[in-house]
Length: 179
Ligand code: SF4
Image (cartoon, rainbow, N blue to C red; front, side, top):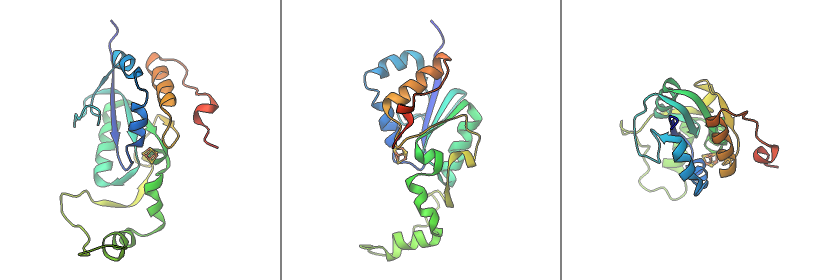
């Protein structure tokens, strides 16, 4: 039996929609677990990462914890894949980039509609927000980009199985067009 590929996934500043789309491969997950061993991932709830063959990142980089997780993935994964619009260009969370961080915090916690007991959280346990939300390739080198919000389950399946089997990675335009 051939050795399984080690696969890790993480969600940074995203909505978990890309992970949910991954799970939409449905019964093919049974085929996938014959090919891969899941390491750190919300699917396994493993919190640390060892040497991995493939790392999949959902979400952009919005806080210091996101930076640390992303750098750990880059350090340990031979191949790093940006999955979805948030990882590739910041996506919805990056809409805040048109405002200063202070403006965003004040609007969210002080001046926003329905805010009671206005106070900007400052618990040291909360990861420090970055001034802007960044695509992951602004922080680490990325090997592959899988566009979509989210990429469909079929797109993720096609990409992963080709990558695992060492086949050419070209995806049909119908898999990566959204107009
Ligand atoms: S790309 Fe879309 S589905 Fe994926 S994390 Fe971002 S908002 Fe969610």
